[in-house]
Length: 148
Length: 146
Image 1 (spheres, each protein chain N blue to C red):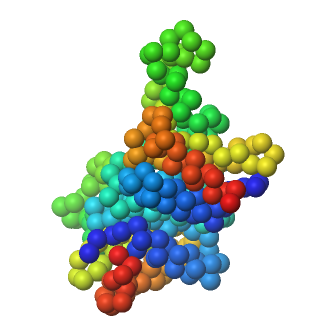
Image 2 (cartoon, chains in turn green, blue):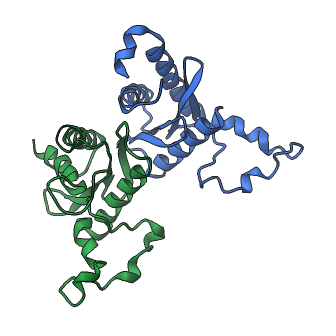
Image 3 (cartoon, each protein chain N blue to C red):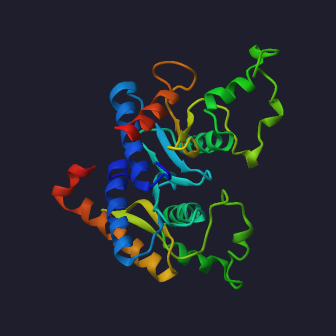
């Protein structure tokens, strides 16, 4: 994988939706962006809240912008992590990136063959946070589809 | 009849097929009757801003229930709507051609926006997609797609 194509993006969205509807049983939105953070494809499942589309895109963008999952970025803002490594130290980051930066777990960068980031996937609508049923797990289901 | 992800996916694949025939990589956006995005695909080779422009066209067509290019008539200096372009329409208002309302059973169920080629190409692609929606939803056999 050197570059994300629309075909790959559709495959990921398909898998993410299947996971969301069959296992999480929650309608949600999923977005895939390329290595520049530009949108390739986004789907909002029937019944998913309208705000989820934008948040999914923002999560995918943020994951690419920082080249790490937004789950890790959320730790930067967590007041319980003051003084810890990678803990609360970036509160001024809120609202940066023309308001597009999103610190909610659910966005994951996609790594290509040579270790470069080739894109990102973001999901919104399932409870975020950490757990078996979370935005991150839906995004992971999408990424797994790339290796089928 | 409402816009569902299944209808959106179906018409996106038809739209992309048409675009490949024309040799125009483009972005196609499908929104629901309130203008909220249901699905958007940017084809390989389409410029990145086309995604946002396609979305804006679809929004404009859906909420005004008219082709996005028709919205210009409100801005005519002799019309009472002069200056409406200075309003903040959620940053989504566009008067560029290439957005059409999607109708089914005489009702607007959403909007379609295409961006990537010339205005004529965008409009003809958009028309092809919108026609498919009304066909899909008019015949009984198509209703299983909903």
